Amino acid sequence: GSAAPSSAVLPAMVLPLNEAMRQANALLDGAVVVGHDLRHDFKLLRRFHQKRVLLRDTAFCSLLKAGLDAPRPGLPSLRGLAGAWLGDASLHRGRAHDSVEDARAAMLLYRLIAPQWEEFSKRKFGEVPAEFIE
Image (cartoon, rainbow, N blue to C red; front, side, top):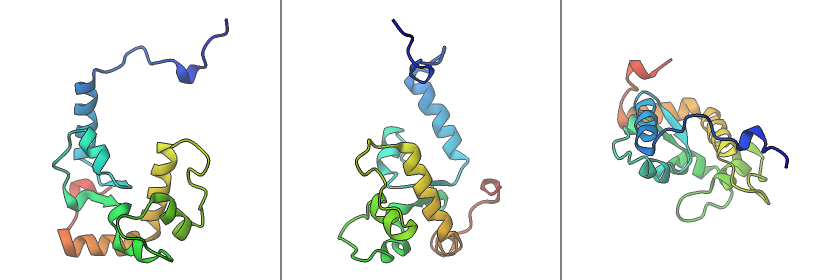
């Protein structure tokens, strides 16, 4: 038979779940985190201590939601935000969920309004500690 594509082959060493979670949380401890509706991701990582001053969650950004033509009650979808702000209504349409595509869309949304978001965050949560700024 034919060999599996290299992307389907697991690395020689796969970390045990607890070690992978420890390493992921250690990385997140030292970073401003940008994403969309990160509650579920943090729950899976058992990360219940994320500092709000270090979180940029597009699902909870009132400025982004205000830019929607017809905001619905509840949290806006990443597809809806991408359509309204990035002119890309095709996010996930007819395709499987893609976490890399989601991360790119969330980062593009953040970068569009970063100065306003940072000012809001500073007023609400305080300055981002210097050790978290590149």
